[in-house]
Image (tube, rainbow, N blue to C red; front, side, top):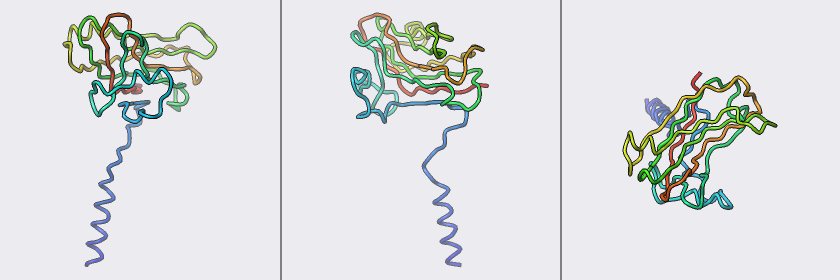
Length: 178
């Protein structure tokens, strides 16, 4: 009886494993918590502890740094099957209408100068409708063009398009919709 009790206790503890598996449809996600100490060069200025939606870190753009750190990878490395649609979801902090920035999703085919896909989510407009000076959710579902392939490169990042204030991004998730 004692051995059965120990076996049940061991099974219960094993099933309470704190590791969570990411759902199969999530292509990439980042809360920027594990980048500190791993980045180098000018991109470090984007990673900050000034504001964060979760944890301690986020990325930002500001006068003098027009592009934030973000996601970039080959489509064939993030999905073993063709991607027809994605949903990009992030939390952004826009202090006012003077913090003009765009959340950019772009896909480039190898060897081509022109983007196969370029979509910008204007964060000033998002702030107007959802409120400034707080963290707001933004998301966009995008249909991938027929021309993309395994070697196409996808990037998701903040682009400062003007203004005198910083804009922040945290908790980015890219999900396969199809």
